[in-house]
Amino acid sequence: MRKEPRQERSRQMVERIVTAGRSVLARDGYARFVTTRVAEEAGISPGSLYQYFRDKDELLTVLMERYWAETGDRVAASLADRLNDPPDRLIRNAVEALLFALEHDSQLLRVVVEEVPPRYSEAHLHALRRRIQDLGSAYLAGRAPGERSGTTRSWVIVSAMEALSVRWVLERPAIRREELIEELTVLATNYMAGAPTT
Figure 1: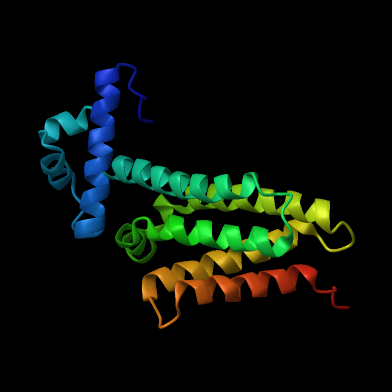
Figure 2: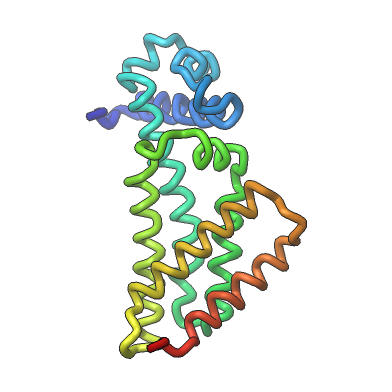
């Protein structure tokens, strides 16, 4: 378990290494991600890097934790203040925030999704989904109480929005951003409003 640095200079060095690691991972991909490249990018010796990170695995774990936490912060911040909005406006804002968060560093997203082994991201991605699902569940419970589970509906909506948004960012199909936002808004709004099937 990595120790958190206590001194400001040490914290700055960790940030420098993490920033360099993020650049190397996005630029070179997972297969070429090695600590010597990260140290070179950070302008330090490999020995200095090892004072803060035991190995490549530990650095990658921190990179994935930071990446998914930042993505979650961007989306959750846009949702938390809008829980009183009508469904179509809330969903539109959520989709826009999700796309913005994923597009923020689309090259890194591609490497994270397509190359980095899932073991580095699973726990962090699960925590991100949970944050957003909890907000969605709270929204649905307040707006549509009843027999249909807000938790289940929130999971379905969040999973669908995430999958479709990631695919759009990575594949860049001939679909304008505004068109995608509109379609996802209609999809989720209709799903939320639909009557349960028996």
